[in-house]
Structure formats: structure tokens, C-alpha cells
Image 1: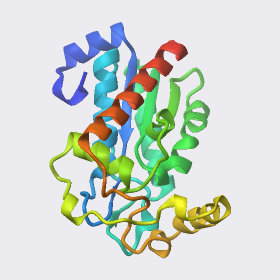
Image 2: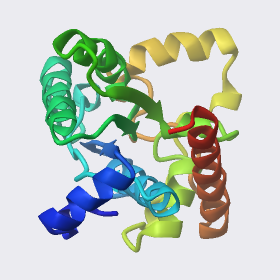
Image 3: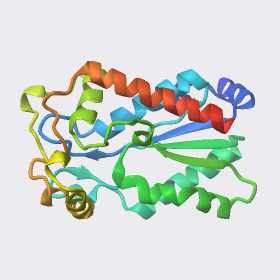
Image 4: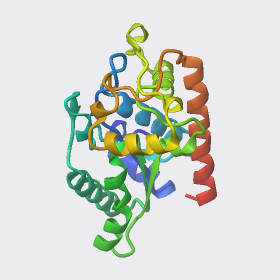
Length: 234
């Protein structure tokens, strides 16, 4: 149920039947030399759309810009954590006024997590007896290790997009080359400056990513999210 494609009477009818909405949140930032800057947004929208199709939940427009300052001087189009949080709190309250009772914020970018985590409590503080707000990051619903422009993201993009340039794919920082202690330290550095730990903007190795792998990963994620929705009785 893509909200932007529906008329007012249909939206109101759907809300009466199933008062749940999904807000995908992505980013616009570099994803190595082979993936488009829209990668996070493209992936989270695709997953949210499939979940919407399977549940009948209303799918809201994707928020395309997130918190990506850590990718400077690579290209990024970023907003502050406070600005992203304020915007989403306003959206949740607006949806509640439109009789939406439950809102799933589906995150597609690691750098958004801190801002998104505080939204449920801020909505509750603003509106007592307001909507139930749930924040999920899609990679928590897969077994594969999350990466950035590596095997996972490149495989998924090969499954859903024609904008992948595999001839330009390069190996980046590979976790198996480092100890857990080193990875923890590198992760802290990357949260402030991605280029300081991986000069080509890639965390992982995308060179052997395939569309088949991408479809398999997507199926796992979507199936797991729908299962969690059923468990949570949304």
C-alpha cells in the first residue's frame, strides 16, 4: 500500500482496516566506486515495499537523507541527528492524528541508529497515549555480517538495481584480516571518519557478489521482518 499513490478515501478506508504505517529511512552517501550514492535508500525502500505488500501496512515516502557526515570527504548529503529525529517525531505525531496506531521506522543506514533510537520515547513524551513507534534496522534480520558497499550490499543491489558497475568493484577493509579488538577500534574511527579506515570507501569485499546471493539475503530479511510482525501482533 504505497500511500503516495492512493486517494484520500482509499487511505482512510485502509487505515480503518489496518492502522499501521512503515517509514523507510535511508541515506545519500558514497558506496565505493561501483554502487550509486542512493544504495541505502534503494535497499530499505525495496525491503519496506515487500513487507508492505505482505502485510497490507501503509508505506510512507522514504526519507532519503540521513546522518552521513562520517563519509566526508567522500560525497554525502547529510542532516544532523537532531534534525532527523525532530522530523520523524513530527511525522509520527502527524500519523497519529490521522488515526495510525502503530509506526514502524525501518532503517537502512548505520549512521542513523543513534538518532532513530530515541524517537519512541520522544513521541511518547509529546503525546501521551499516542502511537506505538518501533525502530528496526534491516540488517538485524539477516545472518550475514553487515558491510558497506561490500558483499552484502552489492549482492542486494545486483538483485534490485541496474546501477551496479561490477567492473569497478574493489576490495576494501576485510574483517577477516583483523582481530576483534582491531575491528572494534576501526569501527570507532569509521564512525567519525570512514576514509580513515578504508581509502576507497568500501568495508568488505564486493568482487564476488551476485544477484542470486542478493535475492537470498533479501528473502531472509523480509521473511524475518514479517515473522517478527506476527510475533509482535501488529
